Length: 406
Image (cartoon, rainbow, N blue to C red; front, side, top):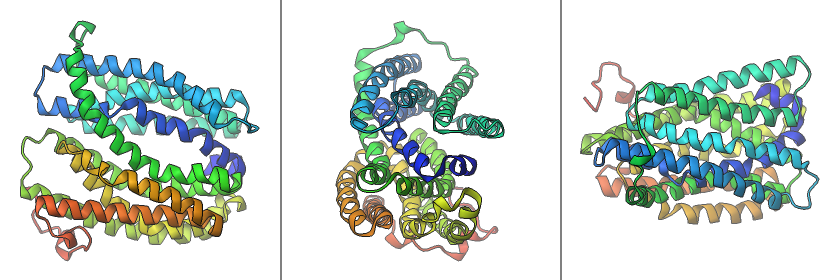
């Protein structure tokens, strides 16, 4: 992130963010929630394993091809009238098929509770990306086009890592095991998963979409780097969420102890996230501009306005994956579309008045409201007190205390 941001500068970094907005959203659309549905069907063991695997694999390959074509058309329309090289648009679309197929592999890995392999599927391509960026930087070949090419190569590396991990499971399937009735059943559940995660991910992409219209490319570049900092902070919630999603998906029964475990994880995570943010803000203000350049001197202020949202979103992520693991992803659909709309309206209004800070305020407000709604719903459904999610207890950090889920 650091080398890439410094070499590109804020303007090119903003263009990169805009080029990758639609591919990121189309990945969720192309998945159609089938990754989570595959995990659910494998974990619950309600259907023939080979039929689930064959049906899932066939879907992901077909979807990858179809939505890559649709993405290219959408990108042309999105950048119509703008001075963007069509070659860059083509390259930005090439990673999608690999990401979509790999998403199917990830669903299979979580369905078999192979969280370590799932983690490797995320880690190894990141290491490969770092090495490629260093090489290109050393050869003075790092620019917007080469960064996009690296993006495609990383997508392919993700695909390869997923393929090798799944093949280690020694699973043998054939096209004859593909079942249309099962596909329909998986898509019914998957569509809800997909829509739920689409609106969750759309929430911070809205800032880039609105910024492209109302702000300069430099401002969008600063916003993109701020979001990257937030995503680094969310690595802990993301890692924990993966484990809990796999566990929740494969649980045959969710008892009150499980609900209290979720509440404990939320309050501990939010406290740790707060501490990281308190360290992160001065780092963004005094260290980051020195490392990646003065082009990014707006990141610190933007990050400051994002902190409440970052903290609350760490809670939301855990609760939302447990909703999904319980087979209730539709709960997020009760409010996330409205939250996304609210975010869009606030982003448009506040970005005109406050510029880049307005985007951060809008996102933070939307995350705050979404998290509070999720907490209230979880508290009502599973009989856990609301303050159990928010306020850490000394016992949470005591090594002598027995784990709640034991």
